[in-house]
Length: 415
Ligand SMILES: Cc1ncc(COP(=O)(O)O)c(C=O)c1O
Image 1 (cartoon, rainbow, N blue to C red):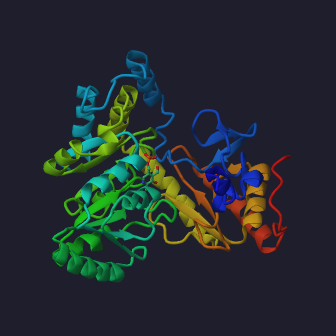
Image 2 (cartoon, rainbow, N blue to C red):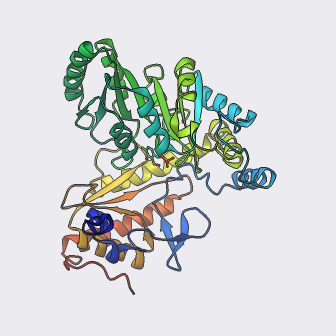
Image 3 (cartoon, rainbow, N blue to C red):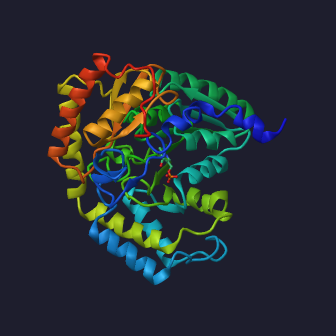
């Protein structure tokens, strides 16, 4: 069979809705300066869908440093992979500062979080080792594990009893194989806003021999008394052996890093395929990251503002009876019952008639029959934005309950 024909006969759970969603619910174009107000299809909307947690994306000081770095170095420098010809003092400085910030000895830059995580997992285990991981793990963790030819045991999301069972199994197995155990969790789960149970996981180290890798994409810059991450928040900085975060969220950029003790980071520097066989992170991203890190470190007001908005939004939604799950982080899911056509009608109403833009999440990311609107509060929002949004949500939830969106057809996005 022709390989294209075969693929096109099954577009996948998202692809089957492509024609009814493309350009509106999927691949929407947000235009204008990044912030709480952007244009969607020519109309200004209140935006709740960007991981620009600290509002740094469009901060004038950040923009100036980014622009100056691009003017000075262009996008090419440095050329080549770090190991061959792409090393600079700025890359090294950023790694030193990141390591210190997350309380680790050493750090290594990654060009992208996704690829970096895949490569870290690939490099940290061999066929005799066992990975034990949370069932809600991000795609980059799942895809990293696809490269693993040894065993992997999953535990239901944050279920510590089941984690223990899997650690027992893993320990038995590694005693036979002579391998080790790598536990992988996230600091903050980006869909539910749940925190990984880092404290309890680290406690299990007293009974089992394992190393802990934490993907803290959403926790870096937002969690902990100094915004240093989920491990600071839970007071387990030493229990996390490998700390990973991306620049794509609070840092509002591109790039990522992994941090740990000096020996293991040295090992990764000399083995990590995503970095050895790829061009070095371009200089404007490195200089831009140094600036952003400095702002996160020295200007707590961004984080304080973020949390003011988070608390107001989550408290207001809860008080009005909305189901926002069990979030303990800025990520704010609002859960409704409904099918996919209903979800599109509701979201269409929200965007067209209330000028509110947030992400809509449906099956297969959430169970069938559940629809989730995901709000990402940021330091760029105001308390008025929160009040307006909660009022609008009350109205749409009344319409949803009355069956107004229950048309069984997808919203007409051609208008
Ligand atoms: C939990 C988590 N890990 C990793 C990534 C990937 O990071 P990047 O965007 O830098 O590839 C993301 C998304 O950005 C994420 O949410």
